[in-house]
Image 1 (cartoon, rainbow, N blue to C red):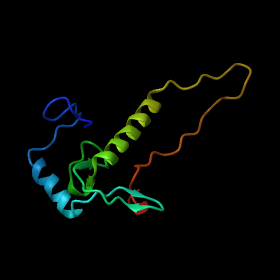
Image 2: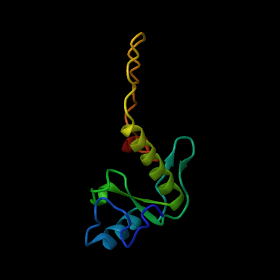
Image 3: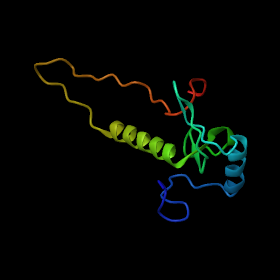
Image 4: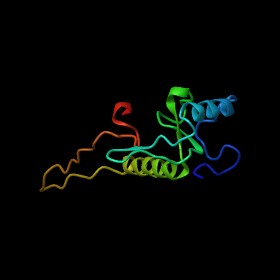
Length: 118
């Protein structure tokens, strides 16, 4: 599990007191099924066992949560970690005799969300 350093792991934003109720409501809303979506494959058919804050770790509103299986939650977390590492890299310096070397970065997308939720 991604957050395994104690009861709430290494979370940057603590979970609210009503987290068990929010988590249950999220699972019930989504039919206890993973909501991961891939173009051409559709929605994952695996039973959801985790709850993802797809709009941000500090946003605990039910509309910002989705039911997700462990496999897809780990995939999402890895993508977020890679994006974080990329954003922390020092920008390339301009070579005195060459072009600016500027790299255009595409906007961040949350993996596994249907297009209408992006």
